[in-house]
Length: 354
Image (cartoon, rainbow, N blue to C red):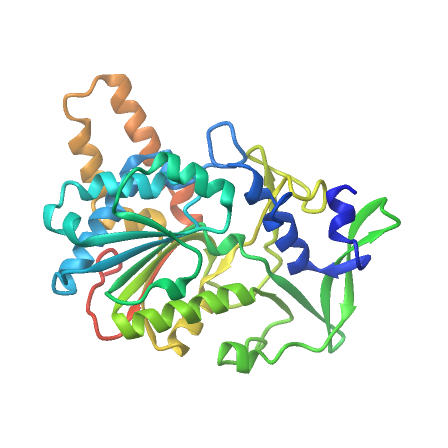
């Protein structure tokens, strides 16, 4: 039985979110469960892979947050979906330069893929690091969550309003010849109960991830109880009006979502307006939403690039600024990638957003 047949073993059509879940996270065939897609020759690359400057600035931001919290003698850092481990590895190296912080922090990696955990463990050799499979394992101490391209890879449902009737998008495997999208009449979930507000207001199209909602609920409980915040980098938009943002990538090029399940990355654009409203309902303070480029410049990435460029040869300097441009230029990652910072209401930290 091939993977497509396995996906549709019990039904010839399944909801979109179920198709995405199986395509990305099937224990044997799922895209993230059997390979490392992050490399220069892989399916895509992320900001930590592009330049160590990105990680250094996040590390300094974390230390600054800890200082604003009153320098507690214990703090958790949690990376959500650490991928190939590049960000966490470089965070560990960055924190060596901050003696007091280096003594008291613990870095917890939340990862579903056993394959990626093996890669992370081979790359990150440190007694400061541990792997967790459930956020409820975080029991005490202020916590800083870091999510870089985490929420965009969570499965979503899609709903359409046609002639005053809602439909849900499914994926159909008819006669095992070719997969196709089909829309089926549906009754919407009770979003007011799930999200604490009417998710459908003013919308004729919805993208909805119950995983995103559940993760934010878990994170909010931890932050409201123990203090801290969530710093999230992802590509997305701030308009309240939703649209079909589903996309697929393979070998650093757009690909067909329905072709060759398990061998394509499937993702969507994050609706930061939704994240913001849900977080407020969960009792968190949304400090701000910024373009990645503006955020990184505000916390000093250009100045840091200038410092490390000293005493370098022309080729090395060119490489530093070429990579910097990829991170901050509006025509590259600087604008389409957004940064949102959520925190417990009582703390006053706002570095990078004011």
